Image (tube, rainbow, N blue to C red; front, side, top):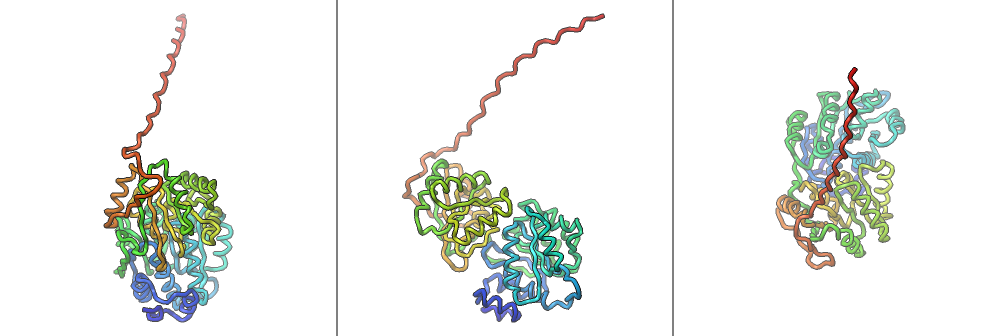
Length: 407
């Protein structure tokens, strides 16, 4: 199938042709027709499936053809809510690319930076607003944003927003937008809270499920290295001697761990930067842009970035630490092997992480192939001993209080 068979309008098709889009991905093929027909939609799709275009293309077309074209200042008619700053920026950039030959204006807002430039963009008039939940509610409360004219409401990465504690913010937005609207909800997984939300905000939705989270992309080659925790840094440096690892995202559980690994790689003359929620938006964006442009070979990231980084040609993903939630493994390795390209996912596993590995293999339905020959094999086949804190020394006894003389 080709995009023109989906009845995409000429101005959008022109932009898609320039982007090199020929055939729609499965989620685009299944989602675009019902959205263009005005249906609500429930999409279950993991990252890397072409989900953004699946909702951006029909949104641009519906708004372009809408009878509610306003005179005077533009009103926000489509609202996209997404969990992270990086993902918000990437969605906004996609709207701009696909809609470059339409008359629609898009804008993106997110926290962690001054709101003044965002206010200036909003005052120029906006048709499509891409936002993170916190900044959106802040600007609505300040009277800077009016969301009373929304025709098309899109929730992206709904399960991730739930994980990040945005459920209350989302409910506040839903209560403020028109009840008569078209709603699209996308989520990689469907936990009970998300299923409940979907039932409450969607009306007779079309349902699209693509590459469920239990499956991994066939093009991704998976490798497992058993290694002691204290030797992971040495194994990582050893593997990065291989020049075929052109670009790699290394995933760790903590912000501190990400910063530490980036410093260690820097000392080994490997260009690397960390990216996580503790860094300023400017620092995160600079690191991400440098990585995309090839100025950095390695990006060390926490899971907040697992679904917020959109890089077409990423050769490797390294799970320096296995995630506590097995679905996160699928999202992490889904960063590579995109757009029909091959990719490699490398995972380190120490003794304490073996239960996490078992959960991952149960989810994906197969064993991750083990690399037997490497210079840092697992030696400590026993649980790590947690060092007990030394007991506090006893407090010195207080001297007895002098008795008051009775008069």
